[in-house]
Length: 267
Image (cartoon, rainbow, N blue to C red; front, side, top):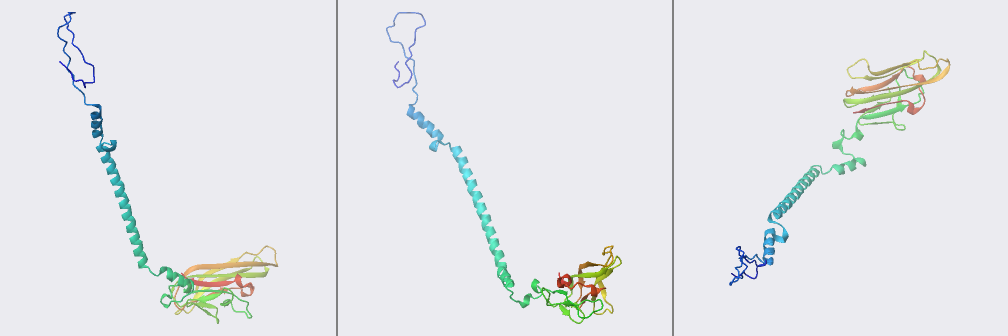
């Protein structure tokens, strides 16, 4: 029996198991062989199993899914950014004149419809002490237009009695400071500093704040001594109220303008 010559293995002969060493007249039968596919055919089959460019179809599918997830995430982020930009444009359209209005306030443009809301024109006053040519009993007089002194927002200074008159009801911060110089100070020296208000419908003034200072002098008699007192508080004032400052010893007040002051402003 002949074998295909394309078989890659050597041919195998059958040997008689009887031990007969006599040569046979006929050539021994050949063991049948089955040819393997040629090398080129095997390579092609392996390439087909690997898929395109040596990558299996399952691996290619996984990579494709990963790419799809990445692109989906990028698209979602782009959508979120677009929504945020749309909301910002809407907010800017709701307040078209905010920055322009701020610039106008900085250069002092007057807008009647904003009067009362503009903090620069709110009710306020700051007056400073002055040197008196005549002595007033306790209630102090002030300088409303010297140095940094001012009145604004409907607050007026009454020259005749030294009071600050308010034309709007509300919560006000009221403050006052006085400085006294005792030329012959003694341990018994003292003074009273108070702030009070006169109100329409009330016959007597109402005390708002008061301070009593004593024991500020040294033990040595006859020496000059400087003492000061500061009062400040948030208080409710009514329309047409007038606020004043009293000192028990006005003759001892310091002549320094900025050592004595009095003011208020609406909160």
